Amino acid sequence: MLAATVRVTRDIDAAEEAVQDACVQALRTWPRDGVPGNPGAWLTTVARRNALNTIRRRRTLETKLPLLLGPDDTGAPSGADLVRDELTGRALDLARTLRLLLPADREVAGLLALLLAQHARRAGRTDARGRLLRLAEQDRSAWDRDMIAEADRLVVGALTAGPPGRFTLQAAIAALHAQAPGYAETDWPHILTLYDELLRIWPSPVVALNRAVATSMVHGPEAALAEVEALERQGRLAGYLYLHATKADLLHRLGRDAAAVRAYRAALALSDNAAEQEFLTGRIGPAGDGTAQSGANAGGSSR
Image (tube, rainbow, N blue to C red; front, side, top):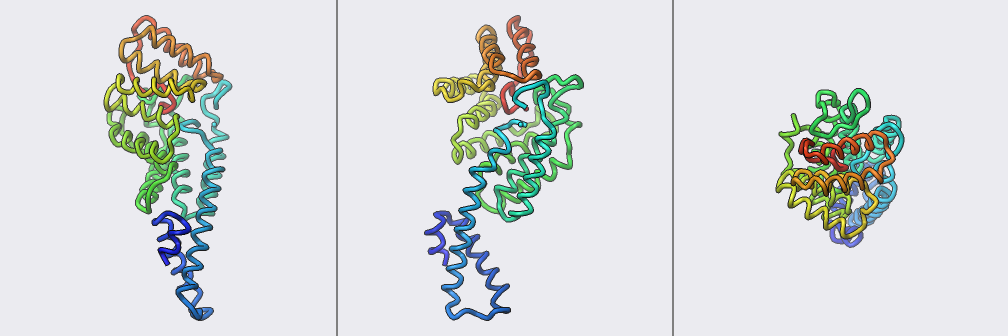
């Protein structure tokens, strides 16, 4: 049964799950309807059908669910506000609905956990007048601890049920940020390991950029800058402001303030969001006169 199902899924874990589901169906239906004439063939057919349904659901998730959110963003690229609560709240409602419809799907659990961990931090992303705050500056007492705890339970459940997918890995990274009692206590080596795995299964340049931020915290800004400059040479993130903002922060941490100012200005030219524009403008002045506070996460993962 397992061998026949693996030929359909090309995934031993998915095949095992499909076979187990077939056995559960047999336990439910055979006492009522009677044992079929060829029980082995019945089980194999049901297991293969379950596997095909799983493949179709995963394809739907891969093509549709990414539309709910972008990497490390919560849905306001332009306008006066940094966060659009009505949009993130709607995305969270949709993810909860998907969780009810597909309770056994680990990636649905991962998506819900990711949204919860991000949504839980929304109150700390800006100050009282809407100014963007870096992760190191945020008031963690304003974060929603119930949401963080719920996200953690979903992540643990998804990780223990089988190999993680991209949403589960992103959720695990977000959960580590949310669970850290303070910025200095963030488990950056663990986050870097998770980014390594995420980059392996989802080789996105945005993932590589966010991984570079973790690299800077584990191996220093010079190692991270080499990774960012490699991404810059590839050209795929030329219009992505967080590439330039991250590079600017790394340059400033290395004492290369003139180059940092140029990178901040390149990021500013790409921003249509008032809160981000104010933040970047504020960074240009200090970087230019050498008085800016050092710190990571000027890029997308700071939010």
